[in-house]
Amino acid sequence: VWFRHGHHREVYEVLEEGLAAVNVDTWLGVLPQLIARVHLPNPRIRGLLHDLLRRLGAKHPQALVYPLSVVQRSPRPGRREAALGLMQALRAQNATLVDQALMLSGELIRVAILWHEQWHGGLEEASRQYFGEGDVRGMLATLLQLHRQLEAGPTTHSEQAFAQQFGRELGEAHACLKRYRALLQQAGLPVPA
Image (cartoon, rainbow, N blue to C red; front, side, top):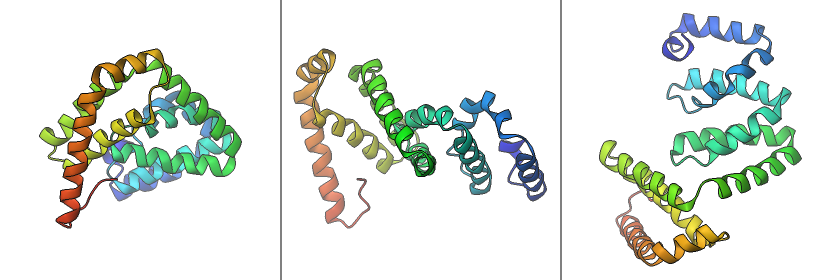
């Protein structure tokens, strides 16, 4: 009801009242489902969700840090920005916990998800953004994020093998992306960072 009909004024008001009345601990069991929706398009529904997640984070920051750190790495800008905003709210109350958890989750993700897998998923996402949605900026942002990671350099044996196998071709592709961005800038069009 919340996510499908929350845009209706009456439903929104009942939800707002109900969410304020229910103990925040009730939502811990469905936290993954809530975090999966952090980027809802409707600003009012998204606002209710973010308010709930901020309250949850104030009481149980450890429950939100890792899932949000994963979403922060999403190639989809809307998801990533929503997670970053929620993480900033968490950091304001628990800076040490958030920083340490982000460092740990970054290392866990780095060793758990191979560059082969990241590039495969990223290329699929970029292709979907371009061909499926006509989202050139999203495609560029996805690809540039992958290239930034590659530029940081390999730190594991698997990453070194990936860089040796694909580094030259990916370097050429990155040069093409940079030229395309330069053309966009010259034309006065918006350029993804």
